[in-house]
Image (cartoon, rainbow, N blue to C red; front, side):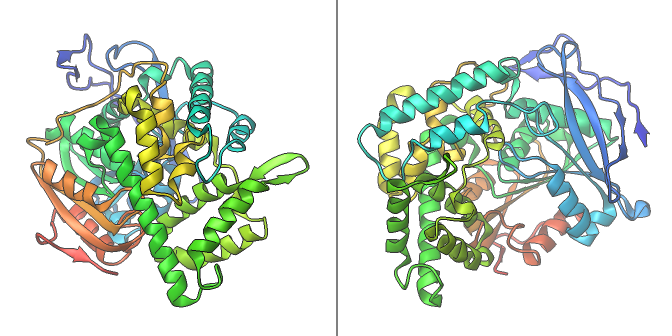
Length: 478
């Protein structure tokens, strides 16, 4: 199916000044990419300040509505990250998501610029990245800060070498502007959007740039936008605390259920395992596999699966004691390159605070903080050593306002036990948005929809399809 739209987008306002020319709405040619899904490539401006200049290609995926007679339009979805590719979420929602959404919406997603099929960023190679992780440890030690500065600079220099052309133009404001062009490209008068995790910040920025272009906006696992963009050390510290707290609740569960890891004292067993792997890293055929730092990274990532993932985490920790399994592996540099680059574009970290802030993070999160804070730049709350040395000024940083004045009611979902996006962030976003409306999921894991396929899914579906909000103070427990 081909959609051709030659009309011009509405006037773009960047930094309060009108663009010289309006950007042309992309023409989309959809082709089959398996199992009833379709793919397309869209061309959008590389620099939205120069909308008639050089372009960048964005990869898109969609699943057409299964009940065209009741079709509302397109539902744009984003899985977060930053750095998450969209194909998996489109295919999940389009195959296993709520039936009402699949019937009434084309499920649509695009990889944000610099990610996946949208001209992905490159920094270090996987081997170079692994070599830097081999220098990290789970406990602070002499020279940790100096090593963190060096590894941060090596990472940043690699990004500059490999992706210098793209770096100034990644960041959330331009992603939001891309999405408004794609909204028009699929023929929708108003945007329908479901954003998870970092996808909530994309939605928040969109709501502030284009409040009148929204039909419904559901933001699940939210960012506190002002703290994220303008007080990054404070924002990151909350995530260090949230990860540490979630790990503590896993250990409590392990004790209560007599899980297979730790012999009744999983916390002490975890510390012993971290120290043992740092003292004697796993090396196979002369190649570094993992140590206490990589173990810690992968454990914190596993906590996002919630209670249903805890039995598997216990099993995986036993495997790690036997010096095998995925918990030892070096993180994926492709994802974390985009994750770091977008956050360094979106945020400004005062360099003079760096050493003290990393020390604080290590103290408030002693089991998980040092491994991430002092390692090579990695995930979300562990970008400060890169961002304080970032080589370019972003053209795509959005620093506010965040109230989205003039937008229709916006649904915000927060998870009380979320290790990635702490619940207080969702509370803050719902109160920051003039039309924000909070739904609380009382449980573990990352996002509400990711954990609650009944209550949260039903309430999000009712809002997206009919515009029906849950009552004030509503919560879900399943």
